[in-house]
Image 1 (cartoon, rainbow, N blue to C red):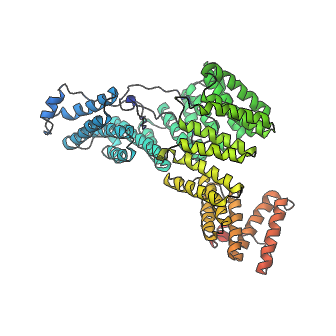
Image 2: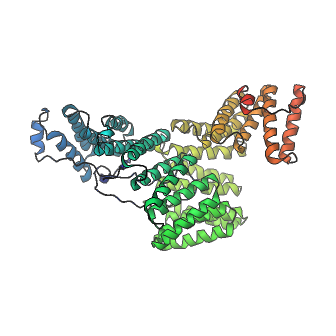
Image 3: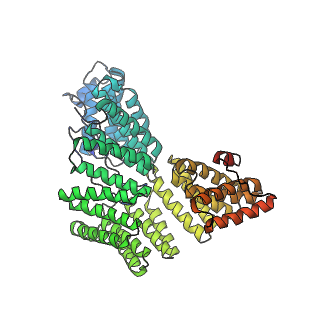
Amino acid sequence: MSGLVSAKTTPNATPQHISFPQNDSRIHKNGYETPSPLLRRTPSPSFAKPKIKPSKKTLQEQRTHESSIDNLDLGPFLLKLAIDTVASGDNQNKALDYATRASIWFEESSGPGLDLAMSLQVEAAIHCSLGRLEDAIPVLERSIEVLDHEKGQDHAVAKFSGFMQLGDTYSMMGRVDRSISSYESGLKIQIETLGDFDLRVTETCRYLAEAYVQAMQFDDAEKLCQRSLEIHREYDSPTSLEEAGDRRLMALIYEAKGDYESALEHLVLASMVMIAAGQENEVAAIDVSIGNVYAALCRFDEAIFSYQKALTVFKSIRGDGHSTIASVYIRLADVYCKTGKLRESKSYCENALRILSKQVPGIATEEIASGLTEISSIYQALNENEEALKLLHMAMKLLKDTPGQRSMVAGIEAHMGVMFYKVGRYGEARSSFKDAVAKLRASGETRSVFFGIVLNQMGLASAQLYRIDEAVELFQEAREILEQECGPCHLDTIGVYSNLAATYDAMGRVEDATVILEYILKLREEKLGTANPEVADEKKRLAMLLKEAGRARIRKGNSLVNLLDSSS
């Protein structure tokens, strides 16, 4: 039985993304590093499709009869011609013309069904290879509509492929929400066809989990990754390379959630499997991830040891000028900065910059921009703000304003906004935050924690510029998002409550501000105790507002809904 998997479609698609291989057993080899919305994705899985029966007629013979629907060889011939044209590297527009004519022929001749769906998916793949992502979407949606996965495995395979290809296309457009929705639909069909515990389900679970990590939906990612590990335990040996790949992803998820001990446990198990398999490069990549966890736990000596181990292996395999070496240098610079060894930190930053500035062929611009952004953060910690801003501007210039890179550009713009705010350049800070918010909205990332934090930061900049009404709207939207994503007791959510209360006070809405501050004080007393300095500060702040309002503190407890809905 063929596995339900699909072909990755990228703007620079290679011929194999349009051909239909019989077998594709992939081992995931990504080096998962620090938590990032820009997690490197594994290629979308491929699968076996029913073969198109090639026509033996020449193109001239086919053209003679093209207008006739009774010519049963025309559709398959045009589709094969499209695939062969792509494979040969010839004119892609010509390949698109062949595929479009094939789709029209199948639509008019046989109507909805497997042949039409396959032709439409080839047509969409060529659209993507030409960078016409918007044009590919309706074609893929039509390929899904014409199939009924209950008619048999071939229909299920093709429909699954359509959903995965649609998800890939949305991902390249920066529409993370729609991308995930498409992947979820594909996984549902795969499970219905193969069952819950088929090994082929694990690859799709991992792929969707990576998409959740990109969207920073870590709880959903953890559930899927755990499901994949359970399936591996049912079938595989403990030394399975595929299971090791899932453990690395699970470690990344736990690291992002702050559960560093669990992350370390999964990384150690994955490392043992890779050592046994003789995968030196993968062991080094895991050592970097272990170093990240040790650094997060403030076990800096162990972090440095792990990074140095990885550095030695990477240099022996890839040479001194590879971007992976620069990545390890940046991590070492960060650790030395945190331990107060500023000279060593700056030296490693300079070493990394020398590698990244060469722009060696084969290194993605996104990877260079990400490295520059990380170095910028270190320079910021070293109080070299101008140099940090210069690096962020360099990173921005490397990235094109394309849908697939909007999230990364938004992250850099938000970083710049924070830096402008810290040095008192509030107008530039607000402008940077505004641009970041617009890009995140366009990417469909309006329910993420990151989006809520950016809204809060923009609200602070607006308040500093006396745009009070705008600040209130931003704080209210940030509050709604963080309440849903983090909960009312999370520090980020409490911070937004505090900012909203201060803004209400500035507007003269003293009663509304007082209600929020009383709730904040209640939370802090419960979590920190009444003697904590933060609690004392909140009490002073509340006492001043109560004095202005002419009443005493309300001692009875109120629900968050009652306290905050009235002040929205």
